[in-house]
Length: 143
Image 1 (cartoon, rainbow, N blue to C red):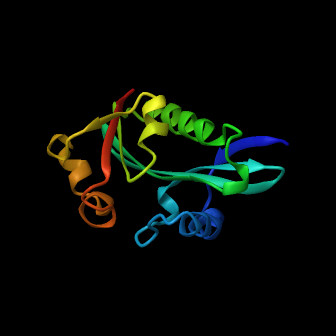
Image 2 (image 1 turned 30 degrees about the vertical axis):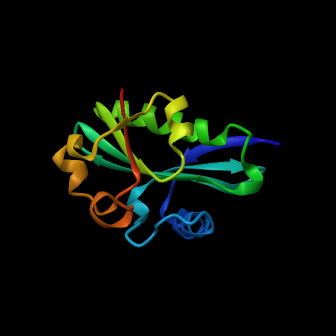
């Protein structure tokens, strides 16, 4: 099995949406410009991670790996690629919302934060305001 990560392109939007829908994640406002990286196993896109850059803070959007490609470390590699890219862009903190992946992100150094602690840039996103349920965990990692 050959695993690789590459920057996402506009052409990846369709497969990204399919992967996200299959995992029960929101796609209503997802645009190709929000796709950051894709994970590839044996030439097939089987993972995706999105990102919204808001200056010094960023929002990690919709990390997903196809069920049959999980447990190979692809999710961790996608997060690592995103964090490295965010650092290069001058981002100091990455925020995310999750309903059930909090243990995964906690292993990667993300900490649960109260919604009242979210910066205004994160509060203004559609994911924060509308797409993720109010009981979703808000998490943050300082880079």
